[in-house]
Image (tube, rainbow, N blue to C red; front, side, top):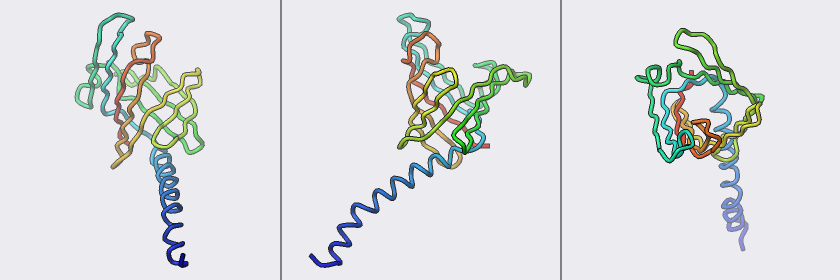
Length: 154
């Protein structure tokens, strides 16, 4: 095999591995900063531990009317920590969550300080992040609610 053929064969293995590492690093880098919710779609199949299914859909137009809070502020820090701040409609901070975060392939892993872990498939394009995963949105003790959320970078 000629040196040129070996080089071509080697590039088939080396270049894809470089590209995948760059993608992971880019997603983590893209997430660093302040974000605000602009869209939420949650389907809860056992809402309130019942047989009923409920869906909540909010966007920037009806967010405050539906949820009775301001869009959530989330800050992802370079050191792998994050915090989310929840404000009333009169701009009073009423809840703050925090923890650590990292990216694994295309998944954002958030470990809250209270022990809850979220794993959300994540994409970022044009300063708009989309998060997709299963969690316990309705607080019924079952992580069975399909969540799709979008946040805009500030």
